[in-house]
Image (cartoon, rainbow, N blue to C red; front, side):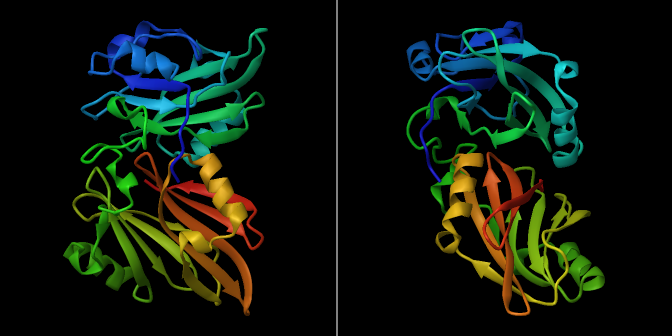
Length: 301
């Protein structure tokens, strides 16, 4: 899903930590990374300090509405609704920055939170009540306009070529033997190699699962994507997903990369879907009921 946006947060280098109040409709400071002030101003970017392993500064975009401002706040100022959401959905995350979004009258209209999850920055937007809205898209400094990626860049998997795919026959021996010993009934479906060289393997056995291994092939965790069922698990193409699911995914995870999807049936009756995606380097599995209504999302790695 490729969309163009305005309103940007820069996840740059530490010298931006002095910026505490940024407006989404006026010029802001930018990193010395070859991106001109005029180009960044045209996209209404907002600078935020955070760690990054990218060679270029990273921007989390569409952070606030035009005419609004983002006021830097401490984590302690966030509601328990937000912090509980982060704990439940991003286990082991590290807090980086938080902002209250305010309109021209000074009313708080929402919040933006920047965290680190498994070494990747994640930008999240919440409404004024602390309810999750979306995962903010990220771009490197040279990709503020256009499709939002370049060959060899951090987000080059947006080219649709799935360069992170790993042949099941090429998995490390200890990964394959782990399945043989612990989940012999699993049918392996697809494998991915992450930026940190960890592995993600999707499989099915009376339900769909995702199993994570670190760069050495050591087991990390196993996530059940759908309750156990004796029914059928089928692969579903992106275009075959119900329109309501495609709309939800494009709105909630702007410019996400589709990995795969499953449908689940019980006694011949459709019971739901799970859609596996990559959003800015973080893998998610998003579950829906048979009508395409959102159920839950799991941040995998």
